[in-house]
Length: 353
Image (cartoon, rainbow, N blue to C red; front, side, top):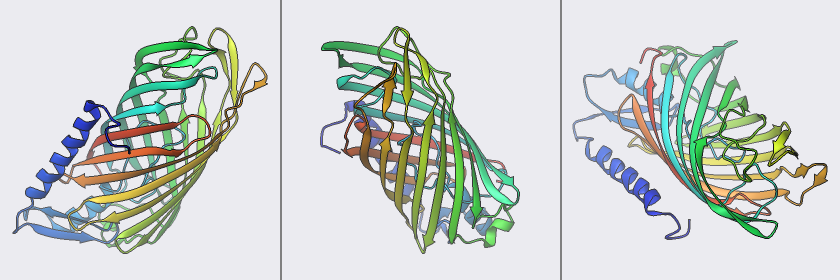
């Protein structure tokens, strides 16, 4: 990230998370009980009144789950494929700020200077599907957008807020992560996990066909994905490959028709679990494709973009954790060269917790 690039609001988010980390570390006394679980390569100091095995199992499973950033085809998401006891539920609330060359559902625009603030509410649950661990999640984002862009030589200002497209995802770990109850999970250790998922975005969002730039889209999107996760001691290496397919928007800005080619993406993550219970990752993604056609005319907007980022997550207690994440565009052929910073709080319950 470039120094001074974010607004005071986003810097306040960073300061908030930094303070929470310091507070959680100060709260771990010398006589606290330290518990280790190799399945998540994580530790946490807990009070002696809790069962050591139970806390280890819960934290190994629950701290690995991460949902709650604004959903898009180019999202960076570490720990998307991990195991957890069946029946565990997750409630997530988050905030993210973006600034830069964002791509929205519109006719071709240039010199975009757009800012968004995004609030997110999400829910997830761990399932047993044919003996394999699985997860269902749904994400509902709300966005405030402001800024301007150029269209046909004219500067178009835009200020709007509303719901962005909600998403629904089902992921299944096909290999290396069996469906386990809380008691069965105690002796499980991760090695290699291979999983698949399907995410669907529904066009239930803010959309005005008389405006050039909108928060939502007037179409569906579908994203099948393959994920691989390999644990090596406290390290975890992850790789994801996906393709996002779009239906047509038949009512784009005063009756135009927009078609979009599939957008293909690759992700990689290097994750490390610290003894304090904190985990951190370095993340990268590449996505290409997504060229659009308006009324049968092909646009020069093929995407070939790189993004890098980092994620920091730490537990507050057995039921709650906080995650800070940031990413930035490294190179971009067209659009999506933006900066992002966000924070998410996660609460867990169920499954014997």
